[in-house]
Structures are given as structure tokens and as C-alpha cells.
Image 1 (cartoon, one colour):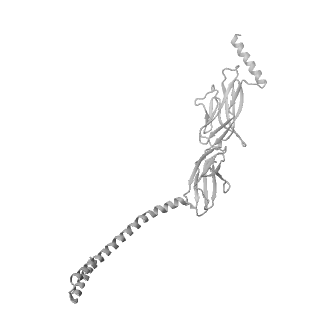
Image 2 (tube, helix red, strand yellow):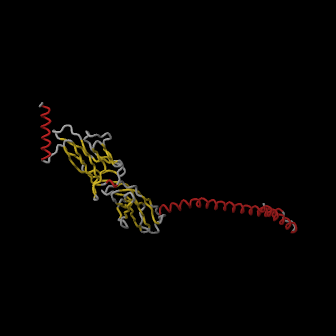
Image 3 (cartoon, helix red, strand yellow):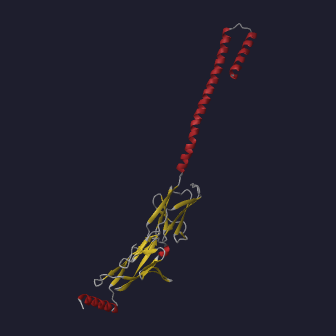
Length: 314
């Protein structure tokens, strides 16, 4: 018996003894927790480690199972040289083979259904091992949207502001802040709704009393960890702005009024000048013809009156 045969036989006896004593020459090391964004790829990291005794292990079986209250569901298996994945699951290594110790699982499109605990079972020609890992999913909330009742806000009536934000997970919260950055208490409990895909929609209402309304209110959305994910501000026109609007409307009136007054003065001056000229002509005629008979005075006066009527008609 040569030295190679003796070494192989010695290794065989070591493996058999280790297995009989509950020991193994391989371990499956997994990242315990994985937090992934909704709709993105997620990878559950698991790698097979061998001891110094085993230098060239061959993987015989890999089984990835998702555990829940209804029992374990296999999502990917490798056995007898054949890979059998469920839709949306595959090995993280595209060209994976039985010599590749990276047995990480890739989920191509993560949804809320993928949340849970996973078990990775690996069998090799040098021993077996099992480990677990967990997957958590988060989704970022959309920018908040604000609308009011009534739609047109004045400071002469009560107003209700309504803020909504959706598409997030886990359940978050909304907060109202005034123009000074002071947080206001919600007027009603936070309303939480579940969409068909399991994501949340948040709604918050803020009631404002007339004549006590600030010029700006901001709605902020926070995730389950308390981090801000978005905000939207609503500017509310005040009485100063309303007065400015009325001032702009009054500008044409302020321009037209002086024009009317000036025009009236000009017309009055022309009429006064016309009367003055008529009376001056009449006075001169009486002074230059003192011996004129009454008949001639009447005739000339009538003629002047006729001229005056013609001028006014013109």
C-alpha cells in the first residue's frame, strides 16, 4: 500500500469518526439579517466554509426554504446535478456549480410576500450543515399631498387641511408644522389603509380656526424608524395679499379720476371764455353807438343772439 492510499484511508476514518461524534468539516455561514427595498433585488448571503482537513469539497445538495406558520416552502434546490428554482429565485452566482461554495440566494423582485425566515441546507461529500437568515422589506413613502376643505382658503372661515402619503412600508406617520417649525397636534387620529400590494397609505387632518391661520403649513412623512422621507408645504394667502390685490384693481381708477377732473375743468374754462367774449363784444357795441335807436339795438341784439346760437350749435 503506497503513501497516497494510506493518507486517503486515514482521512476516511477521520471523517467517519467526526460524523459519529456529531462533528462536521463544513459550516454554512449566513448573514443573519437582510433589509431590502421593495421592488428591488435582494440577496441572502450564505457561504460554505470548510476546515483544513477538507481542501476540495463537492456540493451534493443545496436546499433553500422559506419558513412560515404554514410550514416550509422550497424556493430553490440543487440535487443530482440539477438546479430547480421557483420563479423569482436563483443562485446569486449566475454560473454556479457544485464546486462553488457561494450558495447565496437572489430574489429578483422583492415584495412583501418575501418577508420572513429562510433556511439553507447544504450537503457535501465531506459533511452537511444548516443555517438560517431573515429578510425584511421596506418601501419609501411618496411625497405628501395636501388639499383643503374648502378648496379656496380665506381667513374668514374655518379650514381643514388633509395630507396623504402612500406607497410606504412598514407603517409610518405624518406630522404637521407651521411656518415657525412648531409641530401641531393632529386634529384626528392617523388613518392607515392597506393597498392591494400590502403597502400603506397614510392620511392626517388638521383643523384650523378662522382668523388664527398661519401663512404656511408643512406636512412631513416619517418612516417606521422615525426618519423623514418627504415633505410638502402649503402657502396660504393672507389679508395683506388680499389688500395688495385690491390695490392693483384700484390703480386704473386712480388714473382715470384725475383725467376726468382735468377734462371737466378745461370744458368749464372754454365755456367761461365764450361767455366772456360774448359779453365783451356786446359792451363794445353799446359804447360805440350811443345814439342808436331802440329799433337798431333790438335788431343788433337779435343778430348777436343768433351768432351766439350758431357758435353753440357748432
